[in-house]
Image (cartoon, rainbow, N blue to C red):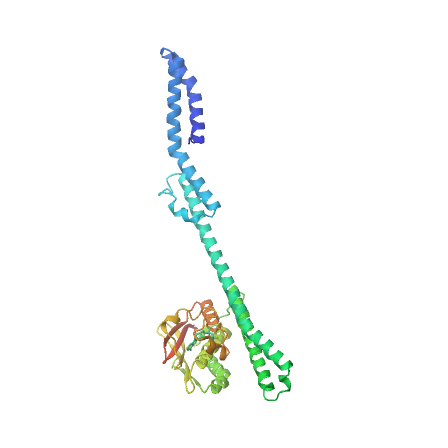
Length: 346
Ligand code: ADP
């Protein structure tokens, strides 16, 4: 296939050079100036075609075919595109390179959109699954009660009690979902301020005391000497501690201990750990613990009132503080969940 741009420029060159050649040949008194002039003009046309083809048309074609791939969303072939190595060589190379980079940027964006779409679909599936269980249970118990169990003193109270438990679960789930969506959309802004970690830890242990007692677990705390005030969003860090201690209590056996430890570290930060001697976590689960709805033992989590969102919320709050949650655990021996906060300047 011939190249139309090269052909056009070659035709113009030949057409313009023909009279010039004839003029020169007449002055030089060459025989058959019309024929010789035509041969010269044609030769110049050929040379121009080749030069334009190799310097311009080839790279224009490359830019066109790359754009075509982008338009058809065929990004797999993009890597195979032969992009000029040195983008500074001339404007055309810069253009080809820009087209190629636009393709790469679009591919990244489309990949991200697909990932988000999958994530959303999976999340919706999980949410509806989680909501179904308590809703069905509430429906089932209410229907059984209406069908006559209400008048049966052996079961009526326990059925109402179970209905209430499931209503509480539904409530916890909706609260955690609201929380996580606010955290993920960035609607929940952290307001870091200096605060006393010992005061906060004291409040958290009082809040969870009753739950710990009901599970026959001892909840204590230990503050190492010379603790400086820390910098963070107090209410959110409180939520982190509540979720971690709540897990410590839920996943410990009767007679177990959960301890919150705060210690200054040489980097000038304060490390806060929630240590339990509970059931522990096998290594293969550790990397997935903060995924939403990830539970090792689903029925144990549900029985204990877990929503499967506690650690996902913890992760988001710590990330918003620029921190990470670290977990060490041994099955049968217990777990340590820890994070650090900046010490506030006194
Ligand atoms: P849940 O509401 O199920 O507790 P989380 O997100 O708080 O959800 O925790 C996810 C899972 O991680 C739990 O279901 C449990 O299997 C495991 N897990 C969390 N904390 C502990 C712990 N201290 N000891 C043992 N397992 C834990």
